[in-house]
Structures are given as C-alpha cells and as structure tokens.
Image 1 (tube, rainbow, N blue to C red):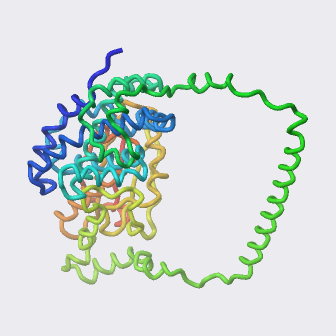
Image 2 (tube, rainbow, N blue to C red):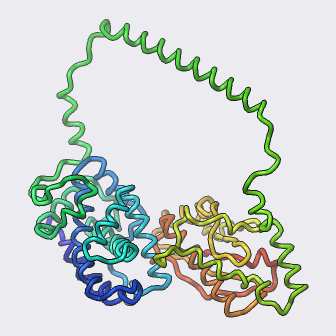
Image 3 (spheres, one colour):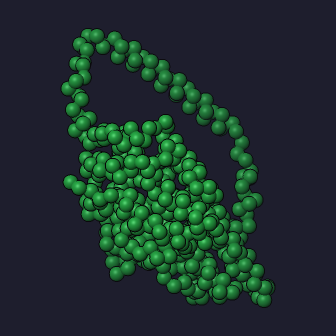
Length: 432
C-alpha cells in the first residue's frame, strides 16, 4: 500500500507558518527560526520513525500513543492562522507537544531539546517550544495516514507506514539529534529493513525453544527455591512487626512544617469578607488584587504549567462541593479556584475523570469551558482572571486526553447571586 510522505506533508503544513509567526513570540531572528525549523522537522520525523522501527518496546509505545485520544488526527486539517503567534491555542499546542514528547522519549526528551537548540543556535527555551509545537502535527499526520481516526492502528500497519518513510529521510538527518539514542549510523539504519513488531513474529520463535527438562531434574531445585522464599517471607514479617512497634513508640508531631504556610489559606473566606467590609475603596484587598499571581500558571516559555507543576496554592477554604452530575447522560464539571488564583488543584484529574471518559466514548462530542469570578474588585481584572481560569481548565483537559480542537472557550462572567467561594470557578459542559 502506498503511503504519503509524512515529512513533506509536515513541511507544507507548518514549515512556513512557524517561520512567519514564531519570531515575535520567541523574540528570535527570523533567519535563526527558519534554520531551526528546516533542520528540526526531518529530525523530529526521523526520531519518531526510529523509535517505532528499532525495537518491539518502541513500536508498542508509539502504537499506544497513536491510538490514544492525546493524538488528534484532525489537527492537520485545522487552520494554522495565528496558531504559532501566542494565545490560548498556542499555549495548548505547546502543552500537548511537551506531554507527547515525554510519553515518546521519557528522560531523553531533555537531550532532544538541547540537540534541537544546537541545530540553529537559538535559546534553550525557544528550541524546546518549536519542538513541542511541531510534535502534535507530526503524530497527527502519522495517525491520519494510518487511518487511526476511524479505527485501531495495528502493529503491522504501523510497521509498514514507518518503513515507507525511510526513503524520504535519507541525507536529511543529524547525527547530533540522534545522540540521545546512542551511536547510530543513520545512513545504515535507513537502509536496514524494519524488524517485525506484530504478534506472529514473537510466536514464530517459540517452536525453536528447547523442550522442558524431565520432571525429575527440576523437582529438587523447586523445593530449594520454595525454602528460600519461605525464609524471605519470615524476614519480611519480622520487619513489619518491628516497624509497627517503632511507629507505636514514636510520638505524633504537634504541627507539620507546612502548616504555617497553609494557615492563611484556611481563613481566606473570612479574610475576603473582612477586606470587602473594612476597606471598600482599596482594590488590593479584593480578589483581583492577587490576580497577578495567576500568571504563575505559565512557565518561562509562555506555556501553561504541566498538571504535576500546578501548586496547591489554589486550595480554597470550605470549597463548595463539586457538581459533576450528569445532565441528560452528559457529565458536567465544575472546577473551583483559590482567592485570586487561576491554577487547577491536584485533585483535578480525579474530578475530571467522568468527563474525560465521556469524551473517549463519544468521539463527536464537543465541550465548552466558561470562567467565573466574584463581583469584588476591578471588572477588567475580573474578566482577565475568569479567562485564565477557563484556559487553565482547557489545558488540563487537553493533557488528560481531550483534544484541544474539541474544546471551545466561552465568554467569562462575574456572578453575584452566589457565595464568593462558589463564584470562583470554571464550568465545563457538553455542547448539545
């Protein structure tokens, strides 16, 4: 079966738009951006093809990622106008790309970033952003070419698709970018044949295995092994008993070292009420006085922080009970925020699970996200804070596997008919 040239499609789709839109966003010279993009795209495709064609483990990893909701086969068909110039769509794209790179290459991702920067002399952050921007498109093109938007991609189909990309990568790869994978002769690798990755290849070698030894020859080692395991079990039980004894004798601490830092948060609701009644003319006392702290949800590259980096500073005293009840079979999600904060809390993944599961089961469903604030403080700052809350939830959902192209942002609102804690929230609804 003939397959499309993924590298050529990637260049046509995002090569020129990235060169035109990212210099202002990154503060880098146009020529340096162009040099990096021209070198980065073939090497990105090459590292993905190498991962999926060099080992069973790598092939399994790539197959799993391509078949997941984290890769959007519809992304290559979306408009790229202004997509690389900054804003919520750009932030979401960068976050998605970083997550995919981490899933693909694990700890090697940082080495790939350094190598990408070395191709053009850009700052470290700029090279990492360009690499993250391109990754969702490269994987989206592979998924679309393999038909993964409509069905499961089989290992044999993936192997054929990757093998078909090798001729298009000849004389375009950098040995430096392949450094994290060890000493690889790229020219020799591109000429090699793809190692089978589908299940029959594993089964085919089983008849060649030596027959099991007679029962009489393995009886004694089994008994010895059993005695060794018994000894380990006894030692483990003794260790547990000793640990329990020590724990009983250890007095409980009267106060954690983290408690002083969290004490102001525990009385935030009372502080808000006192500030609004005792100092009505002072804007810093309102929720919007600390709205600038919401910018900490962004990392130094301008992208939203990863879910694991979102701090517990968004904790809300006496937070309202989350309302994730299903309406007409479609779940709703309410996400509450701390005073002047726009960072989702650590329990977001658990609370969003019903909605993420619904998105997986209903591939055509779309979702809307709305941000809210209380009525205290400047209306302009409140509107900006509500927008950041909606964007933070949208980014967290994208990291959880819901494609950004399926999530729409709605106009922010200021509410006055509920408590202040209830007002500081974002809501996610299934669009009917």
